[in-house]
Image (cartoon, rainbow, N blue to C red; front, top):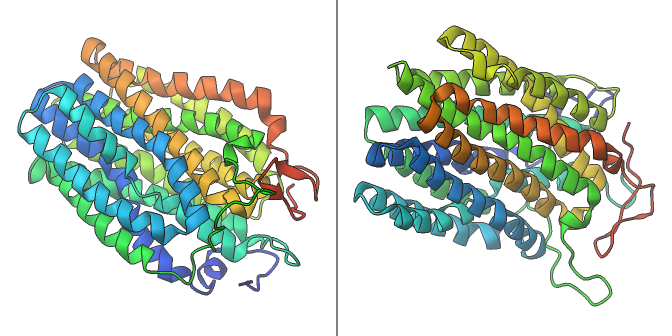
Amino acid sequence: MASTVSDRPGYGQLLRTPGAWTFLLPGFAARQPFAMLTIGIVLLVQHTTGSYGSAGAVAAVSGVSMALFAPQSGRLADRFGQRAVLVPGVLVHGAAVGTLTALALADAPLWALFLAAVPTGASIPQVGPMVRARWAALLGAAPGRPASPLMSTAAAFESVTDEFTFVIGPVLATALCTGVHPAAGLVAEAALTLLGGVLFAAQRSTQPAPNGAATASEPHRSALTVPGVRVLAITFLGIGSVFGGMQVSLTAFSEEIGRPGVNGLLYGVFAAGNMLAGIACGAVAWKISPRRRLVVGYVALTLTASGLWAVHSVPLLAGLGLLVGLCIAPALISGYTLVEALVPASARTEAFTWLTGAVALGQAAAVTVAGQLADAHGASTGFVVPLAGTALALVTLLALRSRLTPRAPGRTVARGIGHREPVTVD
């Protein structure tokens, strides 16, 4: 399905794409786990154990589990279709979250919480990557048809949607956990996942066609065989370290100053900066390449994250958190836009899930380290984690940025994945 666009595509044109609204609305509800799960686990487990370190470790196990299983979920969705993977996934996730919640409330030993966190993270539905794959199927290049200029707008729109969930999700989870019951955040997360996931899976007309079984001449290969995807995965690990470090450190900071309710506000300001930058990125007709935008955005992200540990007042922390958020969206959008140019359609959902999984893995590591640092040395030391994570990822990005250049038209992108049609990238 091709869309008629002008030389300056925008959000209005994007949202008029036939079939878009059928998957956007249920997809918004179904992608809440990524925004609510970590903070819900941290708040519940910290309440029952009294330790940010333990809470961060349990949340980290779920994040690592998601990072390991998400690409497999994406690969199965590419091969058998999104519905076949999503429906059983949301059912398992609801049961796993219920088990983890019950164990935490029963003061179960930490090892039992770790065990329950594994299926909780592994079953998180990969709705964000699935939505991006649907946009790519509707707008991307195909034999005889060039990629729509709306692809970059779609990447920006999805980043805005992700960050809108990060404005709503943590604030909602925090409000439910502090104002209703410590377990209410996780209960709401499971309910939204189940309802949204089932409704999203029901939209069959817009899901990309499954690839079916592999053949001997063209076996299924992982999207991770594309060198650029590996570079982007490392880059997104650093972005995950910002999310995880901010979640735990802002929670610890709010408790430390005796104002726990300010946690949701501070994280909401941080996420709002991300969302506003995403809106702006989608509204601009860019003349510089996504690769260059990624590098510039990542340098800015590292610089702004470097000052978090030194800030000790709510207004200053909110202001700096807003700047950090403003720098995340350009990096995320540029990375996701590059996937369309680097990876063929037959492996695109998997490629998106590698990036989403990398964010989750970076977030898991950051939650663990920041939690330990906050317990031992105070909240301010937890803010060192976003700086360290982004700095290490930036070094890798600068050293390997040449791998983010798409191959020449007609050349093999990744052995066993197939060939690309010509794609224009600045």
